[in-house]
Image (tube, rainbow, N blue to C red):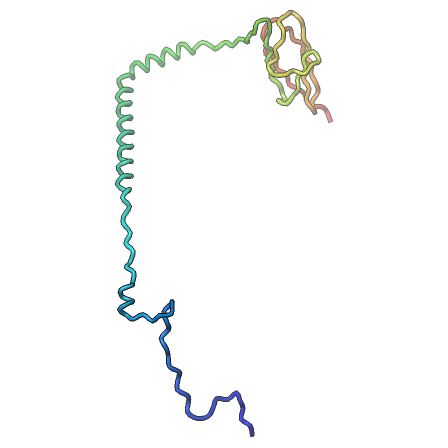
Length: 176
């Protein structure tokens, strides 16, 4: 009968192979003395020296803010009476309603238009207007202003350019 090659061999076990120490990187074995001499010491980090500078910086900034607040506060207390009188004078001056007048440019008059919708186009005497307000020559002549917008019914307004005017034009939506 033949022996099974996968069975362990018969007889006493073989002695284990000798364990060799692993070589150090670089291929040399270092003794314990060499290892102790070349061991790196732990890195000690110093505390940054700018910390006191930052504290002093914020202390000076805070002291400056307090100084300004204190001096402005004292000045405000001293001028409190004057401020009340100035406020009363301002209220008296603004009690009258403000009256706005149109700007006249020599022999021209400004016609200011409030348009709804805002994207409406304006034609003055058949020519597209360059801007709003429109500047027209000062005369007793009547001008045709036509306002057009997509999806809205166009509207025509007659204006006499003898003085500045403000007109409001609101377009109606077209029926579907």
